[in-house]
Image 1: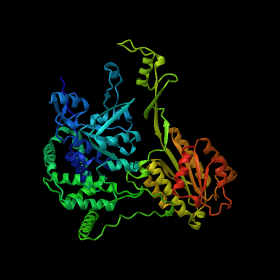
Image 2: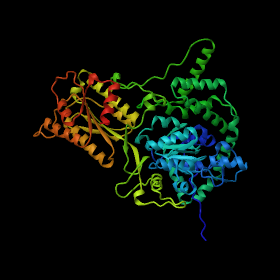
Image 3: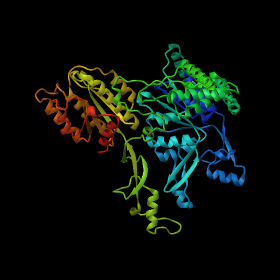
Length: 640
């Protein structure tokens, strides 16, 4: 009989370079309470290989035999309700040992698949509500791996946030609430070019590391050699690194034993709190720094934290929490960390002597735009803007995705049957004979699901020569940056069309990477003619294309211009006639339009009135705009 060979994973210790990534993963293996790690970097930098190799290094865990939630048989605090009741009666639960699991969370996973769903069949048969375990149940006491975490569906991300923060997964359906332990090492990977992560989710990751393609040709050559050697003979390759794997595995196991004994001095603790306060991070920052520093010390076999441990922990735990505005790229060098620590210790010394010294808050980055339009919000999750963030639009889902909120009688053949509502309808008609429930076609009910539709903001910025007068371009950029910030809060996608020269240019296709959009705007030169017809045409074609692939999308075209168009698409037709037809077509395809009028004098002739009338656009004058007005105009335009 053929015997099956277990799939051999690429050894963790065989990964070339990428030391910060490996260190962050090892720290979480020793101490899952750190809160996981976010690995940012381009594709092909070994992110997935490292995560999958991590599970091989972890010691086996003991689980309650037959429990779908991987409960700990020795600790009642880590048991589901069923295991706890059995433990209260039996005192000792049957257990088995097994390797730590790594659970993949796919991007298209539904909330029911992630959190679990109501087992209707069991509810009918046994007369009780039962939970059909989801991915969070599988991941309990293991590793939950989310590739491209920045593209995760909002509803799923919210469930993930709650479980990661509390260590418990709660499923509520039809007034019944069921919960189970959900403690896992959260590992996310992302490519920043595909868009940034929501600030709430970003702060949930304990550590963050950036991985880049190797620059050294010798290291790149070594990667090729090792990969080819592994592919040619995985067994021999794994054997070659067996000793290193065992050494690291034993080091992790020893660190787990030492960790509870590691202490931190009051002086270092106060210094850490001082640094985090000066950087205006959330309270989670210093908690994570201390946990990471304790783990670093344990990994090196020490029972007290050194200043060097704190510096290393800060380099992993602070940069992603320093982001005060959506378009800055915070970076923290080791030298900066040392200086911040020294400054914090000096401040503490002054305070003890009766002085009121204190560090100055971290400087804010200033955009080359009129600051009077900047939205003033903080990315701390307690701030009002972020606490209320989320896509603006809640729409009925037609693809079986989204949250199940109600049921309805189907029109035609049902596609997404609501079993609970179907059972209630059949029972209400007396189809229960004590043993069996008969369901007829008229009893069938279909689920009504709602999902969050995305908004697409097409920003058309007039950068022609006439915009250079009277600092209108600085004001236009200020408005545009405020639009970007508003889009950032609501996780909208943005496209950017530049109006200058002989033809308008789509300089940024639709993206949620608003850092790139802000970069284009800052570098946008001013001068030349005004091909406004070309810009509206490009916006129209872009919206049409997006609506084909994303029917539920809500497009918003924002035109920032003084309306002094002077380049027609066709000389025989003329600018006015072109703008009339193009604007009408924008309205017909369901795009909302806002025209930001940059003219100092509203009586100066322009084509703005033409666009407003035929697109049925909102017309707002630049002097009347401020951050609150920008929010209000966008909100009302998207919900019309």
